[in-house]
Length: 113
Image 1 (spheres, one colour):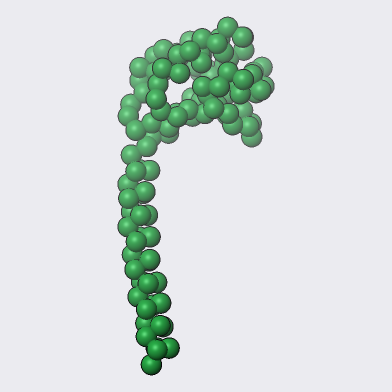
Image 2 (spheres, rainbow, N blue to C red):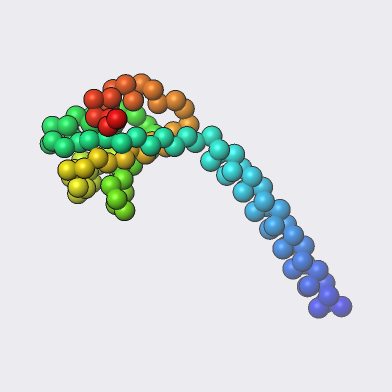
């Protein structure tokens, strides 16, 4: 009898864990849907342009990455940016839950067409 009660406890625990995981997944999915990822090609080919760029984007709270080929660095890291090949355009990936038009206006001189 105890063997069956133990099996029943384990089954109830599994069902409970399943429902908890489903609830966590639903909450996480809603959070991810609210995030916007915007990708923009930039040309940061001088030391001064990198310095100015980092000063501008450091004013914003949302996460931003720079991608060059298979390498990805934090866009707010001046050392990370200098580790990339800056002879070619890099891609700025903005992860935000709101519109970033103000940021895009400030960095418009670095955007490649």
